[in-house]
Image 1 (cartoon, helix red, strand yellow):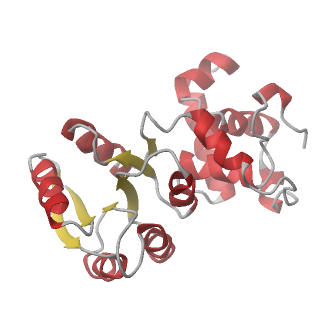
Image 2 (cartoon, helix red, strand yellow; image 1 turned 90 degrees about the horizontal axis):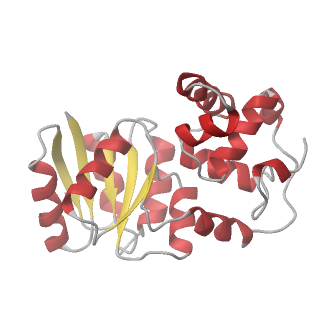
Length: 227
């Protein structure tokens, strides 16, 4: 059973989300919060598996609330659910530690599926949040990337190649096709990358790759800087 905390400043939205999630056999809504500070307190008290987090809330916004919850509770994952789409909120939310991003107007079955995906340890971006959008957010960051962290040196050449493909938004099957490897091998590479770089999931690997300069926006994986 996946325990869920719903954080949204609109009571009507919380009621709707609760009905969607309580109709699922493997999810249980253990609490609600109407602002970011309440969300942090409730997450600390209830220790939910997942927080459904709105972005624009009074007192403290969802991005900062996400940052604090993820930093304090490694076992709690955050799925951002908002009416605000393709803008800086997406990048900021993922950078804060969110493991997924969905729009509130998504069909109920998609919201329920997103919860299952994120709760299982995977990462999720709504279909509207395309690879090109992620690249655009990264392109808006300072051009002078810092020197890669020491942990990057622990990656094998193949793992760096896989990381570059992850940053392009490729799925495991797509990585398998590109590198001519089995899905089991691809999963092993991804798991080792996350472990070596101390990252939670694929979304965080994408952010890491761009921010450390391992991947340059707009380049294909074969054109990435050598390192």
